[in-house]
Figure 1 (cartoon, helix red, strand yellow):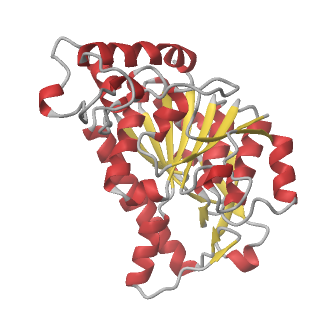
Figure 2: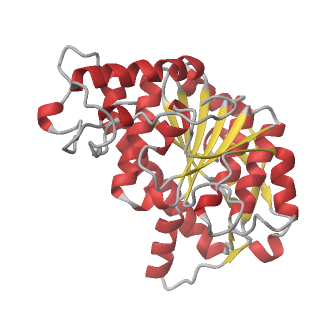
Figure 3: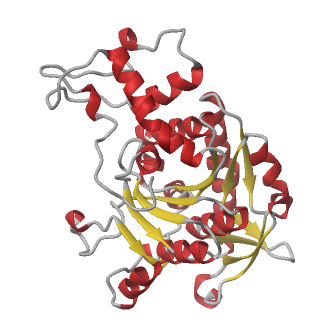
Length: 343
């Protein structure tokens, strides 16, 4: 995505014709064997949703595939070899279809030369297990209040269940993923939150050591990081996954930080999706927070974006994870899929 956004034709628009719905992933429309695996993966992921054929003249399917790949080339060239840190959670984690979309996007980006790093939370899964144990989840300013019993469940679910499930999905899709928590290789060192008296074992990132991470990224593997870490004494802490993603992006010198959310992005008017702000700078975001236009769970998201930008990440985006292939729309189009924050 360009540094400044401008309206663009969706990558989906090419396939529209006068009368019927085309699904490029239907059996009779699969890519021919002579197409390279990378090209096939690229066009398959970009065009995986059924498209109504009623807006522009129909083109032969083969020409459509070529057009899609050709239009993507400038964006691929722009980001090739660059590290992109993606925070995955929310609705995109609860829906099997959206989860599949995110996994395909991550694998595609890796196939075409980007270096994705996936940081995940697991709020829905944690809440499910807490419910089974009849423990009521409590949140304060968008952060989970975490006592010792809750911390044990958070570690079990994020590290032992969600992380390994995502690794398995990525490996099955054709890439090589490696699962980590913040405690592995001292990747993250935690410290208690300043509000620990109320939040319990909710931590902040005191330090990031990328020595275990860089070789994986350089070798073309996809790190999948659970947002749990320990302090110097070994006490485990639950750290907001948005915060972890921002700190990891800064430590890696990432080109881009992307947070998948359950909203279209930053809204000028709460509850009005039509008031989406496509692009804003740090000064503008800080003013919106001060004026009370941004609140609740969006506060830690914008704070981690601002902090990562201040530490050298070029752009940070808060995008709509409910939209299929929102990662590809954010990276491979000018229009994007949410709000881009610049320094």
